[in-house]
Length: 320
Image 1: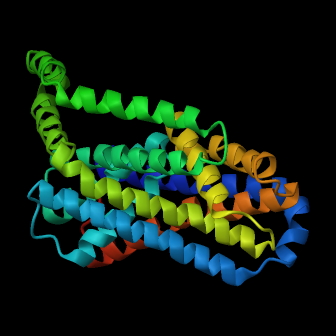
Image 2: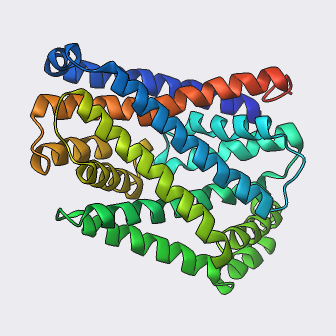
């Protein structure tokens, strides 16, 4: 099976998963939320979608920062933006590692080696974690429990940074791969290139700007929950919204399930009820709407961006 064929089948599987999951959520909450949706102020939802899109625009600036850091040039800004968005087609994967799809797209459109840009996904997730942890800490000033997740996230970040900073472990892995026969031996140069790129991306001088962008971008998504709650005529606090959204995202990121499905939703809904005193029907409705706005909206944008790229580059993912 060719690479493009495998990718296409994977994309079909992701879309089927989206449809099944969305149907399950709507069926589960239909009787609970139908009355709530009848009184919802949909102008607030438009604002929430705009804030979510603002998150993606800021994260695109991170993508551009990393490409420049790796000295990847010659990619027009529009194609770069569409390539960045196309990674969202596989956002429903554990830790969003499927977003490495961007590297495949960049390789097929501008012949940039995939091993060179694939580590960008790791750097993105790392700075996202740092940004979310910062938001959890800020939000936890008025609530308890979030610091546990913040501590777990901080440990995960520290482990990754220590592993990347250490040359002995990666060099040992690469040297053993080089002595191996077959596929493993042939992969050794690509793994070595990927490690070198990752070291460049997570050097201390390269962490400040992306982390600041992550803090602002994820704060926008957290505040999208706030405006959705306002749309249900509740009186939430911005701090509660940031705290519940950030801790739920962190839990979904640290537990290896596709897109944090189930973990993020359950955590978000329960915290809105228990910490925020939000009525159950409103909490369930807000949880469903914010997940559509921040997860499924991204998947939809990813497919639209991929379609636009294929029109601009007809040979992208074409059968060979």
